[in-house]
Image 1 (tube, rainbow, N blue to C red):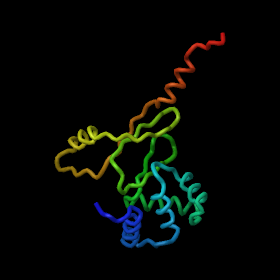
Image 2: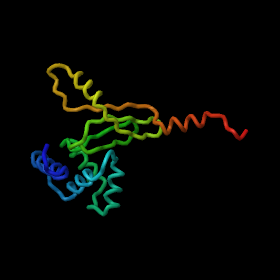
Image 3: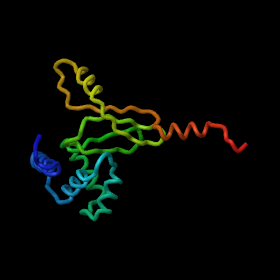
Image 4: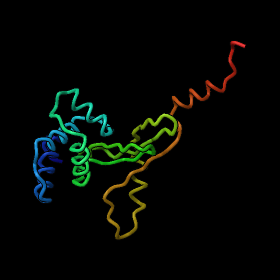
Length: 160
């Protein structure tokens, strides 16, 4: 594991990616990278744009933001998720611990789940000769808050 700070590692990797793919190294692209690596957990494009504006970071257009996120996904610096709604969600890819996602089908809440036992089981599944580069596991259901609200709705009212 490198002792280089995560943002610096991401910046170095992004610089190498842009050079290797003949892309321009612009201040806007690096501002997006910095915002991504300053954002904990999952985010969507609108949340990232609001965060950048709220923190007086370099102003970028939506088009630049979308295009840069696509580059970051291709460079494997950002992971794209589709949790069942129509909005893509993202999270940074470097130095994240293995985790899975519990997705509430009622409210859309996403909870990360770390499970070493599940990791171990999934590692055994790979077909011989297949080199895994990663995977995503989404478990859909109802979160505790939505289940409690549903139960409360079904209870007879005491005001009758």
